[in-house]
Length: 514
Ligand SMILES: C[S@@+](CC[C@H](N)C(=O)[O-])C[C@H]1O[C@@H](n2cnc3c(N)ncnc32)[C@H](O)[C@@H]1O
Image (tube, rainbow, N blue to C red; front, side, top):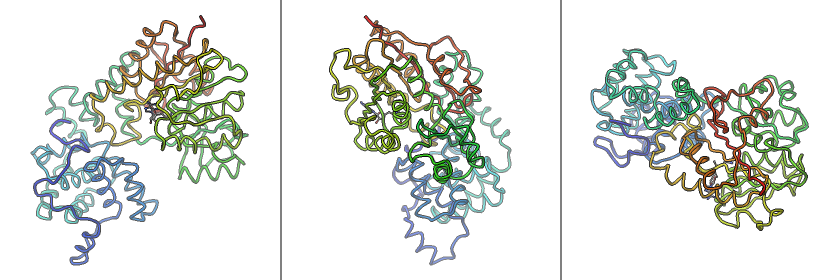
């Protein structure tokens, strides 16, 4: 981000920042003076912003714990979430607007004041908060958390921001940008290298014209989607009829449902009770992830007693789908995850499947590049019929889900990730049965992690052949919602703006029988 600090990039005390008051110190102060009239939601949003920007916290975890500590009710929790997540997503654009309004670089504004300004500007530009309320509450917030002497500065900058419309600010951003790409990156609040990577990926399938729509989709909060696993005893369409106020059977995945309102936990509990669904078979999951797991199962006819492997399984969303499908197909699944903690999450995630069939899924924890992860010999009958390599990746396909993620990733992360992806693919290929299918999946559309990785794997392993993943994804999809998948490549790329899913990349490779 030019002329501004990325979240996590600003550490230590800044000039005029004050001493870092804790909640308790704040309370002491407000007991001495009259308590500022400021909503709990705004204080929580400010604290979350600080947790993320200064302490590298994950926004969703910080939000959950701050909302709990502040005992916000549902409405205020939603407001705090919109304030914090919206501000974090829009940080690049907000900072440029603050720089233009304050006539100074964001890095010259002390960290606390900058966060107060960011939240205030987000309310003025993206929420329906009345201008006078947004300015007034921000000034009060500055008095509470920052240097009182610059409360007038906060007032002045926010009033200046409120004087122009979004369109006028975007025009000023364009006028002062270093290039058209810089203007687009700032306007849509993405780092410029991410904009370039997304454009390259769209261009590779002939869809470059969709770039603006994709960047906009990254800035919208995703709707909550659920997967209804095999064994539930009811289809997604039937469940939507039982729960018309909470669930809708829409989207590309045939087992997918969209939450139409309310809290996911409550919707799941209600549906489990009213439709007698065994616990653990109705789960929150992006529909792109659902399709990736289903495409591997549907790629070829499943034979009796197949052996499946999920090599990078944590936290287990796709393992649960594979497990439920395996119960029906008479297959078994070995789920491997390098982190012990995440392996435990996989165990929890397959609870529902284990209740149906305790022997179907086994969870282990090893490095997926090591022999132990596979737990098999090298004779053909010991190898795997289907392997999912849902590889660790940059996550550029799930930016809408993690508001701070785009500011944390760097192009310099890619070489290490692609090297790991290569090693995981190679290890998987060595344990794939002749005629078996390997699904290489990333929640990133970055070409270095998608097509380049696949092309290189095909070169290193002449025994591999790429299958038509587009056809497999279409075949796996809900009949009336077959995803549009343009481009010459055999791999499938899903997109938030087109499919309302994360930008999952799915390639299917088979090992030719020799
Ligand atoms: C994209 S996530 C998988 C998501 C999962 N399939 C799901 O649907 O819930 C990648 C996982 O790979 C794990 N991982 C990273 N390095 C690994 C390695 N060397 N071997 C095995 N797993 C690894 C990460 O801990 C992470 O849990």
